[in-house]
Amino acid sequence: MRVLIIGSGGREHAIAKKILSSPKVSDVFCAMGNPGMEKDGIQTVAIQEDNHSELIKFAKDQQISWTFVGPEVPLLNGIVDDFQAANLKIFGPNKKAAMIEGSKEFAKEIMVNNQIPTADYQAFTNYEEAVSYVKEKGAPIVIKADGLAAGKGVTVAMTLDEALAALKEMMTDLKFGASGSKVVVEEFLEGEEFSLLAFVRNEEVYPMVISQDHKRAYDQDKGPNTGGMGAYSPVPQISEATVQQAIEKVLYPAAIGMVKNDTPFTGILYAGLIATGAGPKVIEFNARFGDPETQVVLPRMESDLTIVLDDLINGKKPQLNWKENAAVGVVIAAEGYPGSYKKDIPIPNFTEDVTVYYAGVAGEKDQLKSSGGRVFLIEAEAATIQEAQTKVYQALKSVDTTDFFYRNDIGDKSKQ
Ligand code: AMP
Ligand code: GLY
Image 1: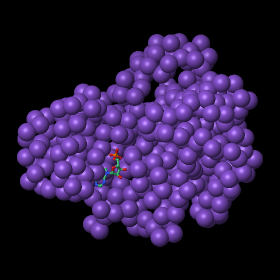
Image 2: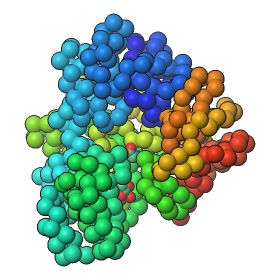
Image 3: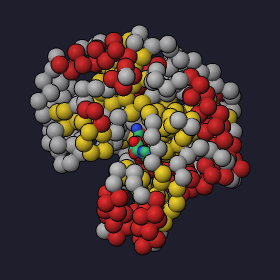
């Protein structure tokens, strides 16, 4: 088989590497990909992810068996609809189904209509009405821009002043552009966060093992929100009963609800959850694999991902098996991220004890330099989270990371 992956980050590196490890696969292409992926034999393709007609032409010319979409933006731009209209096989939600990620209000309607536990909320387009609602509810309270804002359109306000400032920034100063002209104001949920992803085909749900992301830039969850600074799996402090509850009360009703809504979902459904005293509640749905969750979830997958996806695409029932081990992944970011950051930092080489998933890199594969904020992720597996952590941090200490920074506590929450 010859497979095309859309995307260019660490998540796509992990997906492409796993797919390429299958004996069924001869070639994996990644558009645009990044030069770090080439170290693992993944072939990069210089076609932008919004250039659907060129991607379709490439898939036809190269006799691609099927395409897999990593990021949300092409999904929301209708890449699945366009490939299917061209008679090409592709795995991911179509444009309408991707709205479960693209609009927080759409997602909330699906949740309310299907009794999926989530924070109480109200959506506003009128600034004054939003202000009076927030004043009435008081802090802590959560303010979210309705559209996509690359993970940065969320303010968890611990005081009323913070909440009002966030409303002003989003609704009148349009800090997140048009995505902030509508906001969702949400009840603050207290508890441990976890990510539960599943392969979904209409009403069918095949859950993966859970993981935990770290969105804040610095240790102990301090500093600004980022696209994710590291993840680990499993999450032992989340009980098996809580995970089962999330599968039954969140994933299945969401998949079935999307079918009932005439927006059936096929693809990767990602539930961002908080384990509250009253059970797991949804904070967000995504229509794709998480980044950096994928980099710790896929290494724990015992089954052949290519066969799983091929079965899903071809109407067969996939078989999913997971290893009983642990994986830890730490993101290495350029100094300054998520603000303006250094570029062209040389990338160190690591020993084979750890896996490197590249994201913001440029240059030749043997002379990589940083080009983005989140540059690469170091991942390791072991029998326990602690051992995996030790492998990752020892590898990081063995190289020069002067112009980079990373969190030193990825996985620590599992010990509390
Ligand atoms: P999101 O982009 O929706 O994942 O939100 C970013 C982060 O804000 C999440 O990872 C949570 O840490 C936090 N968050 C979002 N919604 C809530 C909520 N209702 N209560 C508490 N924290 C939240
Ligand atoms: N790790 C968060 C996300 O992928 O949205």
